[in-house]
Amino acid sequence: MNVIQQFVVAALVVVGSFFLLVGTVGLIRFPDVYNRMHASSKAATLGASSILLAGFAYYGPQGAGLTSLVGIVFLFLTAPTGAHLISRSAQKMGVPFFGQDADWPEEESGSD
Amino acid sequence: MASDPALLGTVVDAALVLAAALTLFAGYRVIEGPTVPDRVVALDTIATNVVAMAALFALSTGEGLFVTVSLVLAIIGFISTIAVSQYVIEGDIIE
Image 1: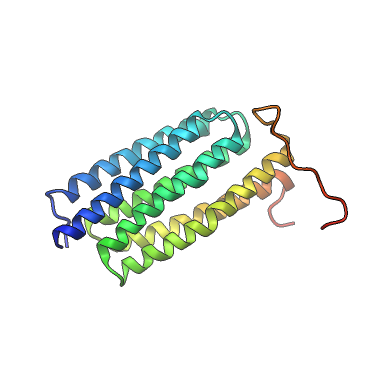
Image 2 (image 1 turned 30 degrees about the horizontal axis):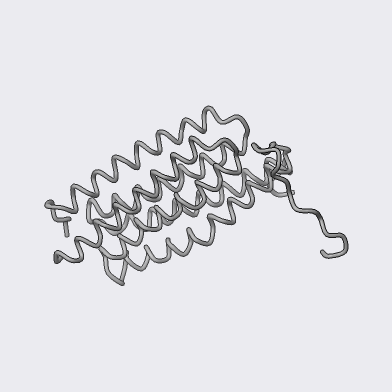
């Protein structure tokens, strides 16, 4: 492994752990379940994807590197889906919003 | 192919320690979270952190098999999130 590849892997690992840190701090400190879901679904997913991209840069385009790319695609497909499902179930359970001026958009009668 | 101990090993080990500490801190939200969706979101974050930790372990030991382990853990986390969110609003997973 040459120096450039080693540097790229180290930089991707540093960026990914920074985004994991941001996502977990947002999960702990945000005031509302919807805001916490925002932090966890975007920042933590980006951190894990960056670390998997470091795995792709480490292992090359075959074998474990290809599995890393499949993992990135899977995370980018499933993290918004899971966050949307939890948000919908929280809204159906009646979990209140943190701010009073936030509201769901008006239902359009007729369409769907 | 073990990782070079000069730069990469130190960075990957530090990132492993950081990810493990962040997983423990997310456990605070699982215990303390006021509502059930808070706990589900925190468990989802823990699952994402464990995926990153498995990928970092694959970088640390040089075993490419642990990337597959991280993919399987991602699938398990997604399915458990969907199952719990369906159970919370419907009272049943498959009706």
